[in-house]
Length: 570
Ligand code: SF4
Ligand code: SF4
Image 1: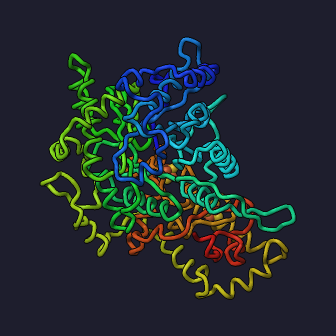
Image 2: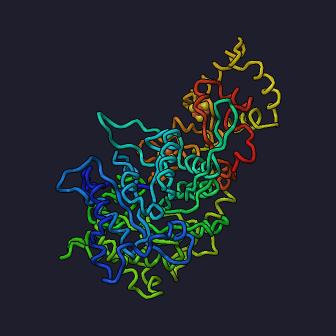
Image 3: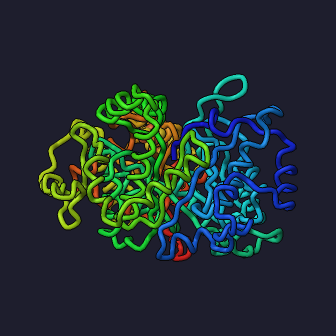
């Protein structure tokens, strides 16, 4: 989930601040939130003891807030601010939890559990983010063990933003797993991770208790971007995600649509957290420019922002009201909670919550039309209800339904794609066509006991797949999963389980190509397969197969296409 890297709000941190803060807490030093609360309030927040899981699964609408760690250790004059702000939020009865980001914007920062460690007595009210951009699967697992051992069970699993900078140049992105793979890993840890022991026997490790969250990025203009987002969300939930937070945005109709989409797939029970990012003139300009992946501010909203920002209060009241009205709408629409982020101090967050709570029960219905900043010609899965300005819960977009019946032929469906489908259907579909024969042949030609014909077959494979798909020879081929577009050659994050949240107008977040998943969607829709494009278990590729024959690996059940046991599929 994209968020602005913190430079202005929390400042930098002094290494001594953890000790100072813990001592202060132990000594009962009052924070500004304590001062703001009623004199009879206990020092501990009345929310202590209620876990984030209980908050999201209970009846009450809760509020949470985001904190963003800093880059570097800070200077004495800026010390403690970050820790104090997080402590202040957790001591404030208005806030149920704080959420701590993991290198947002792809910029290196102190890791989330550094700050979470300071807040560890309230671990059950802390959400830590975990992203796949900087760590391979072992790094992610080790990180998750650390979270579990520190008591941080609430984890938001994300693919992460593409790294933007690093020491001596840009950091090499990792993306060994994507968000679906990470969710599967965390779910497997919850089930008791099965690992190979020293003597080769399978051991089941003690289970963790992660409450696994995921993100969805619904603010997409085109059908070919939005529908794969929704399909991927369903895949994440099937892989083990237990709660959802949509990307920040300013169109309540789209937020509402996420809930409707989940309900339409029988997933309406999954709690959804409404995401509010407090705008400023600068932030609105950045979001409008498209420089921050997945964050959208339309020209219409930017016009309003500029108008109010030119006023005597520089738009402060407008920004606060916008955020408060969004929170009121989330509550009215049955979201489990509202989550506030932005370059603001805890007292601003609290003032916004107070404002949201000051509205009447049904006022949100009047606000709704004011907060539907859709993009020009934006695609919606559900029809529009002009009376409420929201999505119409019982009516799927009729044009979409019609297009499913008679999909136009897109430029994406060319000779290469048709040929790929035909070859796959004839020779690579299990137990059909040439499958049995090829399997028998490849047992003989297997590269692991190479012979003359095996070497010839390998040469043919490398040459043809290189020329047709730009194959990088990963050996665990996902072409059938991605409508025959190589994820390593055509996706900056190598995503094999659906799109990341970064595309804009159908283009990759790096803006150097069309998004692989938008292209795959168009191809599959023409053949009536778009709706089921991600109806499959998570794909987790095996790097051990690199530079080996993917054909042999498929025929000999060494890759991710091999039949899985029931446990593996879960
Ligand atoms: S084998 Fe790997 S690198 Fe080659 S086309 Fe398939 S997915 Fe791409
Ligand atoms: S091609 Fe699509 S899924 Fe891949 S990194 Fe770009 S926007 Fe994300």
